Amino acid sequence: MSKVVEYSPTRKLQELAQMKDQVLDHNITVSMGPQHPSTHGVLRLELELDGETIVNAVPDIGYLHTGMEKLMEYKKYQQNIVITDRMDYLNPMGNNLGYVMCVEKLLGITDEIPERAQVIRVMLTELQRIASHMVWLGTHALDIGAMSMFFYCFREREKILNIYEAICGGRMTVSYFRVGGLPYDIPDFVPGMIREFCKEFPKAIDEYKALLAGNTIFQARTKGVGIITPEDAIQWGVTGPSLRGSGVDYDVRRYEPYCGYETYDFEVPVETGCDVWSRFSVRIRELSESLKIVRQALDRLKPGSVKVDSPKIALPEREMMKHQMDALIHHFLLAGLGFEVPPGEAYHAIEGSKGELGYYIVSDGSERPYRVHVRGPSFVNLQALPVMVKGAMIADTVAVIGSLDIVLGEIDR
Amino acid sequence: MIPTGAPTLEKQQFLDEVVEVLKKAFGQAIGEIKRANRETSVYVSREKIVEVARFLRDHERFKFNFLSDLTGFDRGIDSSPRFEVIYHLLSLPNRVRLRLKVQVDEDDCTVPSVTEVWKTANWHERETFDLFGIRFSGHPDLRKILTPEDLEGHPLRKDFPLRGY
Image 1 (cartoon, rainbow over the protein chains, first blue to last red):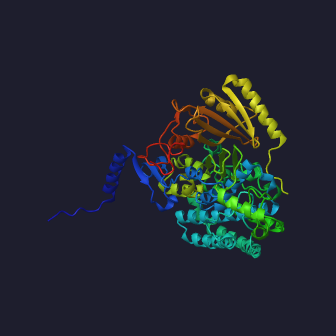
Image 2: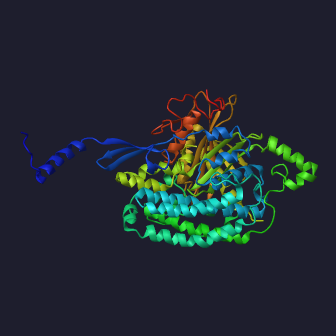
Image 3: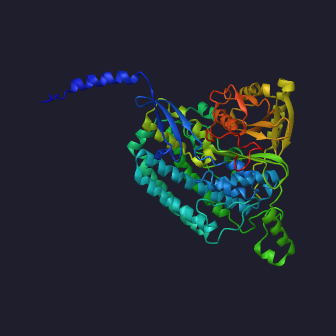
């Protein structure tokens, strides 16, 4: 007969104490991802752990590398717009805008883009910022354990995607902007759809605040977690809401206004907590500011042309092609051969939904770019992750990754 | 028409001043200056890049405290020097951008790392090493970052075919 060992709490504690000494001898390394649901794609973190405390974290990226920068050297300028959609697939309008504005800078036609095109560009990129923040908010809350948020966020995002679908047929990969303006005007009923959305969305923001911001568990999980000082944030090149959550007031829309952002009335939310909660608050406040810009853009919509008046760059109107010989020739040449861009180089940055989205394009005078480089905000922001999670718990890593709002498609390119 | 973000005359004057001060402080190390598309590029000799970077970051008026981008550039197989490393600096207090360029030959493809000046250069330099094969001396962790470990060659070089080998 085997001897029955009676359970003794004291002995158990002694055993545990011994085990603890053994474990403390060395740190263990755990691989988090690439299939981990809260890493937002295929990110792998090598976590060096002391118990449950993170001693060091090393991000491992590149699982989605598709050589987009190389591919862009082989495509014509207008064809590359399609590739930019697929980088940050939650912010395709922003990616299109950054790329086409950089090419426009090289062509020297930045100031010639018609006002209507500029206003529509601003309106749609701000809607995109809201849509991108919706995915961030839903998944961030989901990672922390608040599942219902996800459904409420995707409900509103769906409305924006419906607007995009009505405009250009695409929901996520829109490819709507063109070098020289827009390919075609928005349908007449779209401003009404956007107005409807503007009317409903403030209610949704209040809902999010009530559901999540007032939640004690959510606050406990985010306040004081993932701290990065303003000095560190600048050193590590963090941009966007993640930087503004550390109290640095840097927004490209304010610093180097493009598309006429200097004429819009909006605030740049800044929080000084430096933690996950501050980054959360910044984005929540940005929702209302973006909505403010969308409303102003709606009021500014006046009839007019949506593409630059230059037949060598923008495709002619369909009607003109039926009556004018030159228009047909220009269409044939543009569609078949593309346009040539004068030799030179340009860097153009816009404020994407995740931070400074920069395009650096070098032209050798042909119809294809010689070199395209993308400064993806997620790529740079992710670099600061080890600084934020050092000394935190494993569960905090999930909250911190969520607060950085990364998209792996843009990181790996 | 809405005016787009054109740099003001002040910004251009500011950049001219930066170039003058750089020329005075570093003399021969500062090469050609290019101004195009309302942007200023300064060629810096490879040996002095870290000093120039630190000088610009710590200068009491210029304060180029933010490195927004760093990338490589292949000028073509027959060009000499073949590669360029391009630094996009941003001065947050002054709202001014400046581009630095370092040229490097294929035979001796090494550039001093600026990770000590801006920590953000870490991944940018790893990416440039991975895709162009430019080595950065003094980099704390110079490993491949994007391409698979068993991939040979550097994809963004002009002699690397689009479909791979």
